[in-house]
Length: 179
Image 1 (cartoon, rainbow, N blue to C red):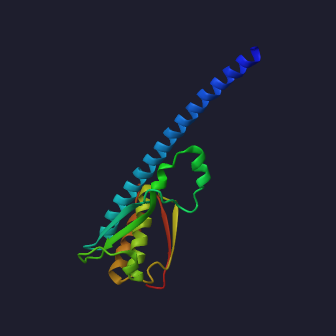
Image 2 (image 1 turned 120 degrees about the horizontal axis):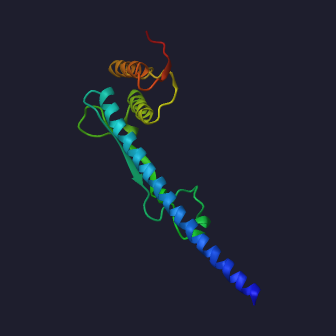
Image 3 (image 1 turned 30 degrees about the horizontal axis):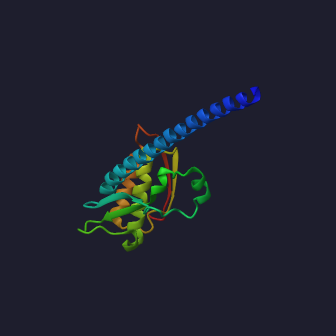
């Protein structure tokens, strides 16, 4: 009889512990979700500003793509979710879409862009992330190869400004065949 009471008491303790662990998991999942959204908003805002600086009359936007309900990444372990009965809240995001306009009225997808335009978009994204979480140095190898002259000038001016910024001591190492 004493052994049974001890086992019942331990079961109650374990049940309470399990409840607290599940509660902690929910809190941590919410914090993770909030951090993802906050970071995405910051990078998105920076991307818009930087893209406008690099492309006169241009407009750029990052859009978080949501996965359709019931659709998951192939990397996810379905057995894990079946055990929990719950789904990770970040599963609802599938990708980030980049929408840009280089002065034209319509927004273009990445597939429609030239090599130089894709380079401008990639650099704008790098600089947007750099504003949020700067690295001590960046190594750019012939990033200007596909750039049109006006974009080359804008990228060079931005690198010069960022390299001389007293707020973020960052070094830029670039290689080019151009003067």
